[in-house]
Length: 530
Image (cartoon, rainbow, N blue to C red):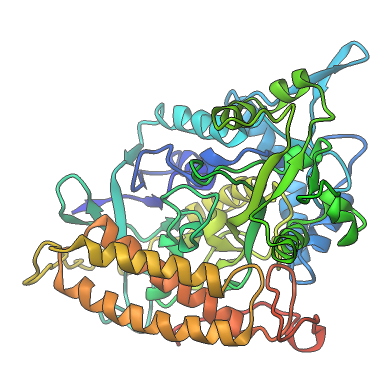
């Protein structure tokens, strides 16, 4: 059995930021189920929204965030994250990250981008590969730390809690079971300060901009441990995913629209003006619904993002990754519009926490996309997520360091017992159920919903969960089986949360309740197993 002062599950911007700060106060294990760089952070193109310009202000950033969140943001949390952002950005720069700059009147200044829902230019970026550069910077710094062990190809199975061991009077985290993917054995790791930084759940949908690792692991683990889960009905669909038969989950950054890109239908019309006065720069929930409506109305398979009015030199310098990727699929975005469709992108709900990342289970923290702090409300403002990851990781590290070790830290933890199980003999069962969940969620729990579709999804998911539970207890655990189990749990949480909200707000839009109801539903949806 291994023991650490802190255990971080996930290696994106939030998890690595926490690990670097906690390492100054004790031993840290960073557990990640693929390579350290296989994260949602590494796929983030746009950048980090942060007030750095004299033309901008904290008040404007707060206002834009609250407006995008459609009445469900926690304003105190929003103010904390917005105002503490500049200091966290400064720390990133001190680690060696260089944000893009431009020359104005003979001096250099940050080249700030503008995205949907923002009233000012405030998005710091490194061309269109911001997330990748942040990930590389943090991993490089992590490699210099002697108190941190990066455990790649290890997947967390379940949290070990005092309640599970019979100490019902004082429930808290005691450790975690982790599958060593190379040996196939489940290891027991002790720590009473566990940090879930596992990212989102995009792979619960058939079409997503997320990498394959985004299977909702943290939310599912927390749910099984009895932790409160909040606002899972609010799944953000990014309006512009590249539409091409050979392209897999490639995002066309909102920054393209921020630099003047216009959404057009198959007749070349700038259709967004019919849906919102802000046109193509409206918040993502509005743009995604508008594209969905336009596609259904016209019977076409996609719409088009047109940035051909900008010079080829500007496009290639500002969006080199997007330009080269599109070119690889035969699309020259400097000469032709890019075919795009919406795709599942970001989980605005998650494990309910405070602004310090503390969950309802003592000793458990959740940071980054896996958490619901109250920043995003019913719809995330573009590029606020990386900012949240930095700020809440910093606050969570400080809170965890202050926390006295639990009184049960000397209790013997039981080793994992597989029992009389066998190796999975038919992987087709796992793949079939995985595919069914993703298609079901796309068809019934997508951008536009109805009560009947949600009820059908709920009934089928209950049956699938029973099948998966039986499979789980009869066969040796594997990454595929664990991910399937987590996907089914998270899908059910999304559906149950959506059924609770009998109104349309932000990212949750239902034809049966098209209006917004502030009298009954101006509060978070909170689910718990109790």
